[in-house]
Image (cartoon, rainbow over all chains, first blue to last red):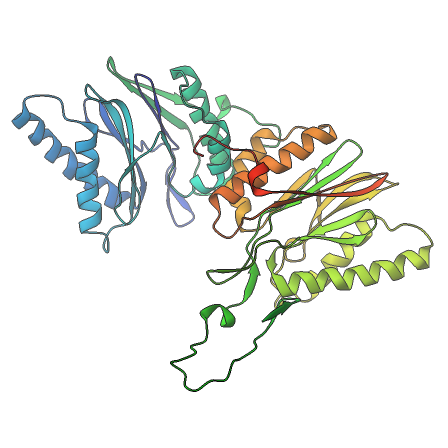
Length: 197
Length: 233
């Protein structure tokens, strides 16, 4: 998931990759850098999303050299969208693109399966996302601070990881702002606790 | 056109040819209560809540159905899944509970009602597709909520069910606290229903809320414009 705040974005993901019932990687990093201040959260087929992310990283890097300045988050999102829409029959990829640029500050764009693109203040995706729509709808408020966003994201991911068998492991967080990128990991025993969970 | 106990009886106008009066798709779709239902215990009773949408395929055939069905004075059940199956189970158990309560000359226990529902759900689990949550108040154990999904029977502090329930698992896990007051419980139920109705296409309409405590059952209907609003509205 990813959340906008004034001055940047907070992105979070779980760390489980499964092949059927087997957990192939329990410490996956699903937050992939596309450029200095643009990251993407990958969900769906690991192979598809890795391939798309690599292709977009290359295209965006080339574009940024031609422009001689940092690329816009919207550009990155459009590149993802073009690829996900063109090859929609072959791909199974749900991607959230988030980052910071000088023109519009922190932005979150979601490119779900099928290849549409839309900007949202908060976006969740992946198999565990269904379980936390209610929590996200009720707890998100516009104008949250960076710390509130981090707490909100960690809470939402914990709740999803408890209910969804395909999500689990640790919570990986990334904060992207004008200053750069700060990454954090919250281990299993340090996750927030809820009374019924 | 009448819809009763989930059966669709069509009144066909005089047909000159198939093309002039094509049969609408929803007449041949199964009628389901794609739903959100929830039941929560508080100190002294229970609160049940449901949405009001009944769909047949993509059409909404009833937008004001009350899915909270009384099984006895202080025991209600919440219906979800196939409309016909759920209503029939509720009617059968209502009858069986009446007989039982006459035999024991006392109000029935919530556990008895839940066991009767579970027996039917389990025995006919291959043919039925309905999930009922049974909740109520009795003198022995106070407010209780039982989930009877496909024939299991489990008592829980609260239970959610129906297609819309997936979207609020995170919300109820985070927000539920033990020993809420009656008022807090009712707000919790209305909030949960509103969030689910906002995300699930098969849930919607109005919110029905039933509060049961030692004094009896109180039914309330919260209309669409009175429901709480969240950030994207």
